[in-house]
Amino acid sequence: AQSVTQLDSHVSVSEGTPVLLRCNYSSSYSPSLFWYVQHPNKGLQLLLKYTSAATLVKGINGFEAEFKKSETSFHLTKPSAHMSDAAEYFCVVSEGAGNNRKLIWGLGTSLAVNP
Amino acid sequence: DAGVIQSPRHEVTEMGQEVTLRCKPISGHNSLFWYRQTMMRGLELLIYFNNNVPIDDSGMPEDRFSAKMPNASFSTLKIQPSEPRDSAVYFCASSPLMEQFFGPGTRLTVL
Image (tube, rainbow over all chains, first blue to last red; front, side):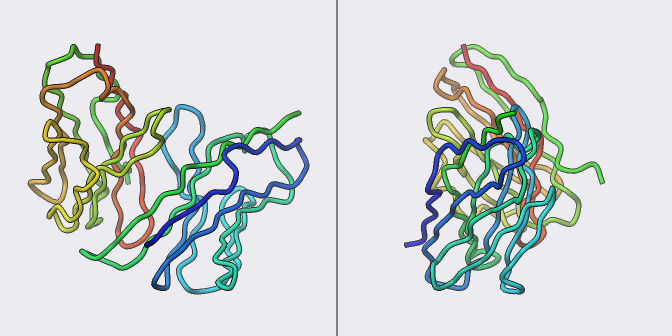
């Protein structure tokens, strides 16, 4: 069965230090993978996506993620955290298309950025 | 483009009342999703439509919940009768192919 595991429910970093949010997935097919961000009391916004092209994906606000099939991982990184990065981050796996589409959401990782 | 539009943005109602949440997807998007978010349960997919047809409603909590998509530009999520445990933020999202575009959400409070 498909699944998504966000390995940390909370991550706390200092401003200016690297960010690593971990996501592992299981999938029977070639999945598409996404990271979404939700700032406090806001809707969700797409950060980046992997859809079987380049394995290193660049997103908005300086975030990147690397698809590693051998490790079934899609970790989200950023070299230097800003205070504005404090938010909830969701990893999502999508399989199939049209009427056969399946979406699996991770439970989210709350990122705190300390001054 | 105005993005996904949801109304109302906030709804406060009393237990037992009917609640209708509305969503206008982005024009040209052929998939529409309804989600519920609470502190206790996180983000839950309730139902999704493809080309106006409900495809997967396994996340709909019970018969009190129903969703319709009469045309490509409008969807409703109805709760009848509402209960306090339905209090949550309800998001609608539309999708052209892969990624989803979310509306601002409707914050529902059932007293």
